Image (tube, rainbow, N blue to C red; front, side, top):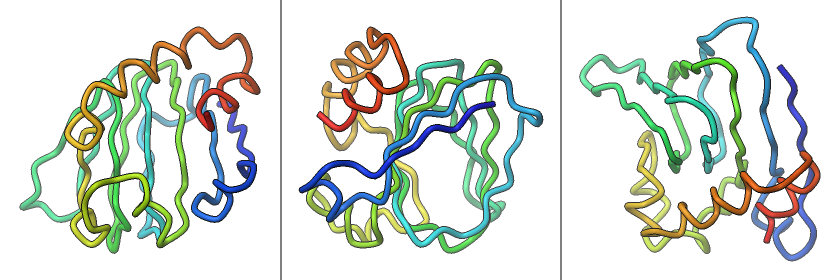
Length: 144
């Protein structure tokens, strides 16, 4: 599996650590992710992705489009279909605030479908990203 990431151009670099593209066939379909000090935006261009919280009282979620994930204070499990085609944003700990119309604290230890936050914007973004010919174009489109 290939991970290509880069720091976005100013002014986004004040809010975002990196934008990235994850593609290919993973060695393992499940990724056990430790607590993370940053919020994320995931845009899934491949098969469904399943997210399982380490807290058994939280039901698992299946995402086919995209989702925001707040700062996470416990482990979670991410399961991919193969092949993986995922585009993402790692926000700085405070960086998600300008991009969502809710306090960042409401996303702590939660995942929320992008459509809940941005409406139909995700469909337009996914279409533009899917038409990009290279990883560099995908990341440039995502920054836009």
